[in-house]
Image 1 (cartoon, rainbow, N blue to C red):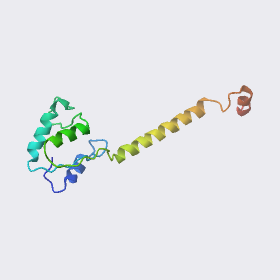
Image 2: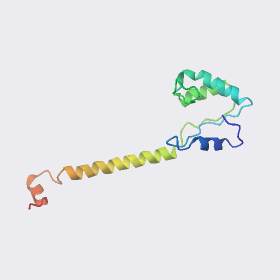
Image 3: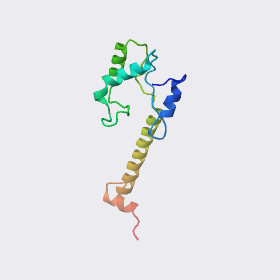
Length: 128
């Protein structure tokens, strides 16, 4: 929840070095009484909190579809974006996959002969 004129400023602020990727925004909910709405949502999802010890940590294991259902029942207008943008995350996965593929190819080149036939293998191997 934020009272800022541009809510995205708050998202950028939260997406600092403490988290591996910037946060995605899945919904903007405008409410006349945002603190009450936030408290209601926290109460509904309380059993799904990630950190059961520190109540100030506002992370929950909950599906977007469940959030959408609960918000709809609260009678406020909103629009959900179900597919995360997640550009940095997606690019990181591509890089990891590419690095893993290159590593596997390098390993196979170093560990295995170019041919499975012994005489061709000997032709490729220098004997000193």
